Image (cartoon, rainbow, N blue to C red; front, side, top):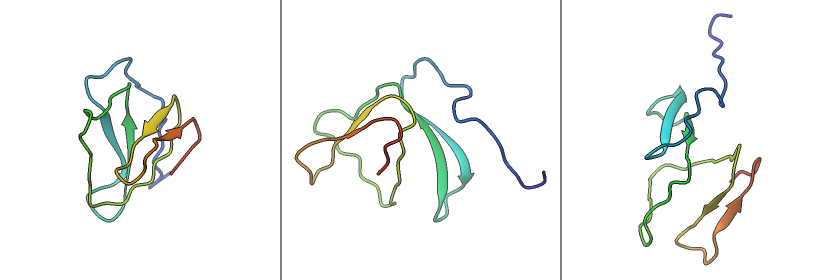
Length: 84
């Protein structure tokens, strides 16, 4: 199976984290990279916005999330299987 990478997105999940955990899965610093991001309820501080130059596609696999955007009055809820 030369060149084929395998793994399990749910393997090695920590029970709690002080900060989100980022694990590279594919790519690097180029135009495309795929990461597993594990969050156990972390959130930005009120009034603090995360801003980045790169576009991002997000899929939620477990749990629930509320994403807030500076240009939207209401948060965007995500449930397992939702993406944006």
